[in-house]
Image (cartoon, rainbow, N blue to C red):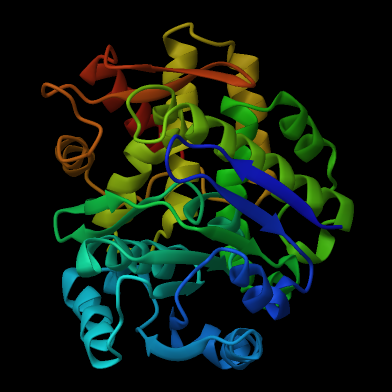
Length: 367
């Protein structure tokens, strides 16, 4: 079942198209956007081997001229030096201001391609074609782009909205199981901060640890409700001046854990899961929500086979230091997104440092 979700913004509105088999319609969907004829696809080797030919065929059949830039796969390559490869390819292929970059891949490819599109010639067209569940429900939507600094995740970046987000659920059939589980952390996040009905749907599912066990109807609802939540929040607050900050639930501690483990031992979704466990318990200890709600969240995270403990060798002091480098720090105060009930959350910088230490120590001691 296809669905179109509008992202209504003052200047750069666009559509999220959820279309089974939609990869083959990429060219025709882009035709109506009044784009230039030159398109450069940015991808990684594994994704390009699987889907590159189909994307090129769809574009060239619709009259576009194509080129490609293949980047190494993995969060550890989300750096300025890798970004330079996109700029070199853009120069070599003579991309103009009317040209378009198509991000064909997961969140890393989407973030880097988006930042390249924001930067090249001071801004060219961007189309997101996410191939991972995490990118489909989160990273490809909203215009956040960037690369990592050696001392922090996504510290270098820009807001640059895509002209189109094309989601083809059928490509998820080749998604590695660990990547599917990681994405479920972002889906659970939407349930906790925004959508009680989605949370309850996830609770009712028998298993959440594999796409194989997910019914088609639930997958459709996960995509639709997650995209609607992100689109609604972004439409209200494009550049994270207020409401949009709630989308960072679980990310404050999650980013620190992800960075400190070298982006390999703990991936993004796994870090977010750990961050949500911590934030949920902090919220319970501050009496912002009931312990029973924190326990329900914990059970759902475990149902998705996501980690709930800190790695035993990770120093708490190192996490606290990393929190100070987080993008969301304001006037030296770490800002946390904390749930107030299932389906609602708030942002606060009034979290005592000793409480953060206490919760992190409990999560490590219980491993």
